[in-house]
Amino acid sequence: MKAYTYIDKGNFGFVDKPRPKLINDDDAIVRITMSSICASDLHIKNGSVARAVKGITVGHEMVGIVEETGPSVKSLHTGQRVAVNVETFCGECYFCRRGFINNCEDPDGGWALGCRIDGGQTEFVRIPHANTGLTPIPDGVSDEQALFTGDILSTGFWAAKISQIIPDDVVLIIGAGPTGLCSLICTMLHNPHRIVVCESDSRRREFVRSLYPEVSVVSPERCLEFIRSITNNRGADTVIEVAGSDESFKLAWQAARPNAIVTIVALYDRPQILPLPDMYGKNLTFKTGGVDACDCAEILKLISEGYIDTTPFITHRYPLSRIAEAYNLFERRLDGVVKIAITPDSC
Image (cartoon, rainbow, N blue to C red; front, top):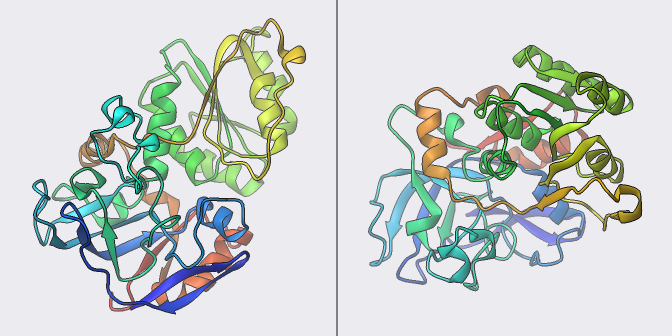
């Protein structure tokens, strides 16, 4: 099968690989019906993910159909449509028992797919710990509706959950890329008093306004002034930073009121500086990524009930054979791209 592969820094390409086989008793083989490109894939391509292994098939955002299961897989059956979790986790170690599945102690635990083991920008993928790493897709939920469940939607859901949002809050979300948009719609589930989205790209600002007119949208240059003007100069009660730049990291703590929660889910290309003398007395609580993506069943239930809809974020569709074009579009942010759905060439 053709597998889009991390060859070396700056270089992805198709490699012929054999169809994967079951290795462990709790493995499953999934036939990919739809996948997507994530900013984390770009971080691998650019050499920013030190643990990424050259030669692995990239891609960790996907849905598919169970083709084969090991003897220990009890929660799934052949032919079942499933969403694939970005993280594989054993469910039994110290961290998994506490819900911290990103830190699973198993060798294949945490973010392994498309990073340390072969991922899903191909035709078939082996999923370790399939009982926990695959979630059945409810009847009536399409592949496009379910596509982001296991990764960016889980990230947005988790970010909103750990931010402890209450109805009186003013919530600032920095970044209106795909993960920022997912953080936005999951923040809306908590019904805060007001949501402000800060985004540097004018097209993305207009995209948010067109979908969510009740949300305030500002540029980084206006953000601090605007937040202060609507909070009696206090600052935002909660800040979710999803943009991942030096400037957005600084803005996150500057825009937060004293005793606020600042949730950092962005992935940075270099270390950030926490200037404690400058923020002394603000008594901020920082919560940092990566995601514990263990709410996929609840997310899919919310999708099936109409509370969550990420299909407007799919702005482009490509067959797998043209995935290099899709990467170029996504990386260079051309043609108003937000997210791209990749389908097998036979579809």
